[in-house]
Image (cartoon, rainbow, N blue to C red; front, side, top):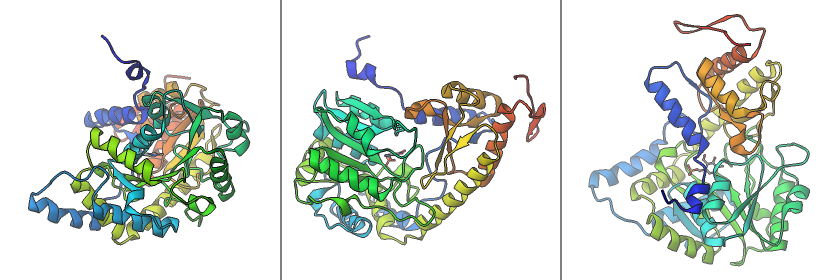
Length: 405
Ligand SMILES: Cc1ncc(COP(=O)(O)O)c(C=O)c1O
């Protein structure tokens, strides 16, 4: 069959595949523990639901402008003012069907074939594939010191005359690392100096712990005119637990936004009016929902760290935010895909192999489930991997027998 070069080059999303396997096993009644998830379990904010119900009852559900409705843009403008201390105009803003689409359309607006896009390793699974979808070249930068906190020197060494953009995701999926103000300041200044686009994927920026405060990249920019090459991405999926609503956005210079809107207009048209209405409700509504989610995640992070610290052979790094912990399991296996499959097969625990994020020997463990999921999940993993484990483990009524070494 004739399939395009780009079509053949694109990998399936590993995280979405794992979710599918998990839902099939769960539907079969398997006693699954899902430590692979990328979405909070809390309900969408009530303000989101009430805002949208009137519209649904009216039955008048129509197309929207390609870059989002005026109230949606106003909500994003207000959000940007509140959390980034930056006043922008409607022409600086586009709403998309998820932050994922906002990033994709931004890349399509700025990349030519052969252009290079840099991002630190480990990276969100979709960055390399999105760049490839534009016919451009992903350049994953592995910090020489093996740390989860990228260093300017590693990035600078990989910048070439082909570099068109750098993507920074802090706090980061999969590590939970929140990069320092110094790093953000340096990368903003460096990109300005080099004339490189800087895409800040801030989708987790309010889900941070230990008293940390969200960082605004604009605080370090000296060019806030319409020549600015900063593209800031955010959305409602993670902070408001609204993953299924599919609303994200980008804030950038007017020309980039205009081109993004034209592309989006031909791709999917404007995002659904229904979910924009819900997103507006969440953004403009009472924010206690976000704080309560943040507190739950911080508590879950602490429990996860406590359990992992008592687990011989694994090397956890304490996340600063998000709902992920990226754990070094290389003592047990250097092949993260094989290890993840083993854990799923033997003890029915879902994890995401580090190789999906560009780093072998690691597994990404989620803390967005319940405390019971975390404690039982780690207990099962430990039982499966530790050669000194007792021979049997009960999962409910089911007895598992250790028939491997
Ligand atoms: C780093 C990162 N950016 C963007 C997204 C996309 O979010 P959305 O649901 O708004 O498309 C995700 C979702 O997993 C993510 O982890």
